[in-house]
Image 1 (cartoon, one colour):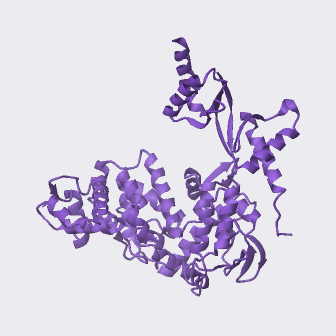
Image 2: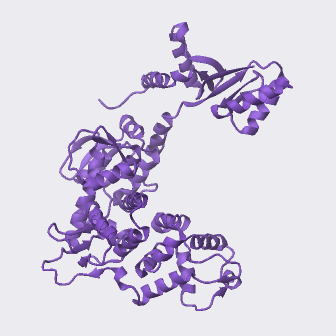
Image 3: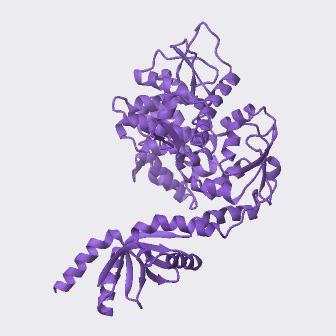
Length: 461
Length: 69
């Protein structure tokens, strides 16, 4: 999924970087860790271009580079050039091609291990207490993350669940995933959609909201923030890092990211921290997180797969994870619960409830596919066609009636009058319905003033 | 020439008939349908849209049967 979609669409962070100013990007590229991380986020095609140009001292002629590309690859090539130009890595030029010097130096340093090595984090030695093992860090990170998701899924149901820290709550509200209703936090439809995404996508959405939130604060330097982000993603799990070389902004981030489960440090320590797998896998492929998750589920089930869905709408979910049960509860009517299995049915009412919450039929289906039991995965298609169609039909049922505000224009004196006015309205693009025989048409409210003025002008003549 | 403010309702023919029936059941001064445009379009009073949707929902619910006890 990651590979496929990334070829068509740029990684979300790449898009975020493109929205930054040239100055910010060039300062960011002085950090070798940032250059390396960005290369990892690029599409294979972009990476290939960058690596080909990296060690050349002289610029290459654009003609020559273009001749490497086959005819079929032309559109991918153009897209790659555009992305790289927007990132200020490879300036778009018709004659010569060479990487921007700041990026070139940064990436070379990153690959050879020279230059500003502090940007990869400074390991802390002799801190006086034992670091957590990678397994313990996984447990810690997942517990933090599950607390957040569980809080979201149970909000508004009245069921009590552990509250995440204030930092997380603030971000949940800020990102629009939840809203504050007189002190009670209630999940928004964006939040429901968020819950059905893959863990990796969730993490990224959360991090991008965090970046956007930080970008709004004027006392913080974006280079510091992004730089630290990339530093984190290059760190090694299990290693303790010192925060002595961090800027004040970055120290605030360490505390924030601890709340999200990306960083761990013990209560009594102020100088050392450890990244968790969430942080170190940010710029790598999504496997690392799902592996971590499958370990969490005592390793017996493969990653994710635990749902069996039959053609008669019965669902059997082999799980005892409260979060997974709560998420399924969004669109399944449960009947029986055993220690490792939960049985329910997809009913019109249960799916309708989900649709009212803003979840789409497509999201339900993709969640079911992503979490299908290995036994189910043997079927083709994975979800029985009857069930797929029915879920879509239930969604359509909600859209049987469409309402549009506007004005109905009628009682025209002559056919000619009608035709002239409706032609004008059509040119404005505001006609929603028309009937020549009845000499009536309905136009969007936005066109009202223009149409009225037009008619007045005509009658004045 | 006249311009009438309202909401254009686009729906399937069956739903339109239900809406017309709902309209008939009301008292004359309380009609929400302003104009019956064609098979699949109606013009209704702008402030009645929300109420009409809720009423329609109840009406459509009568025609569905749930397997659940």
